[in-house]
Length: 482
RNA sequence: GGCGCUAUCGUCUAAGGGUUAGGACAAAGCCCUCUCAAGGCUUAAAUACGGGUUCGAAUCCCGUUAGCGCUACCA
Image (cartoon, rainbow, N blue to C red; front, top):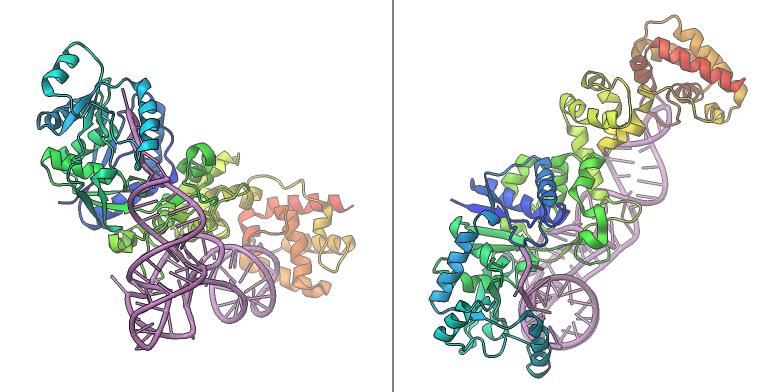
């Protein structure tokens, strides 16, 4: 049984890179009928916040993918500590009593003299067990360090499903910490102990961890358990080619920014899944089911993928396009359900699912993000009053022509059934009688009724609005022209 | 600095020794058309650089350059 995990640390909101790691794990799990685990890596008490944990969970829930098991590392500290001391008892780790303040110094001195830099604090590896125990018993603070085998300068090898076989000499690996001086496990220790305990079979994570994997291989070996198979994912980078970061790139990288703009969760998943992965069949718009059945590690590539945002527009154009595609494909019921909150947000009185089921054919294919409802459907809820009178004037016409057109519209629309077919017939005939091009008649009506030059098809719009509203707006426009 | 990874149109990517280097987004143009949107057609746009190997290289090897990552008692 395949078991994968997403293991964020709660130090900020969920950003798009984290979301992608979750998504790839989820797709891999679902594709293989495996188990998706959410594990909160909150061993860094200094930087973790509950608010961050909540916002990460909110972000993940918004994706509408779900997970099967949930753990918090902070509730499993005993497990990590036991694992660390087991390594110590095997003689594969040692206490390092070097005060924190001396370490930078050691590092810089050693860095100058030893090519490859600083690997461990002098004297500490060699401390004999009795002496080490004595100092610890006296209460002297220490970190527990992994004793990287150094004598043979052996190679540590990782067989990564994406990057292939990579190896590193133990001579280039520092004696990393397992336990901090406050007794809490480090990321490396906690992560490996948990992966072992939770029987994680595959680790899909960001490429920034590729170099850490050598340490993890050593830990798993020391623990006497097989290391999970790893698949490192190329990083997501900003247009300046730097790694996506909350601090420098701001809210554009937060998934809540996408949520609040009105991305559909599965459109977002679709977009993100195409960053660093390809189905290799030229398909771009993929449903969740298609994604699940197509997703394989062979399709993951190795170079970083850029998200194309700017100061003016936080969203990659392709993300917006994909969202429009998914939006258009939505069943009317679901479209209505999802758009209503955005209509209410825009302050549209009377916005209801029922109303939007009627409006859907008029607006659905004209929206790219759900928030577009504010600009695409406004005139269905709010009287257009603030457009310039000049907009009523048709092409190659003047105000007099606009007046004639609007009066004629009132005249013919007063006496027909108010459905799109009858309206079209009446209006086309009217254009003929006025000897106007259809556009010259339709455009003034459109502007009068919608308050703008670009709007959904006219006859359907008039029908949806109803005779009373249409006449009120025609009158208002006529007044503006006087 | 050391170590590791990466390099195809502006962006996401396909092509894993033989193709006019393909698709998509974005851009431009045309068509359709009551405007917009959608749709259709077309154009412009790439193998970082230098050496090998080979009959033949985007593809394999080496070097250079550039970018990224790791090098914490952060994750």
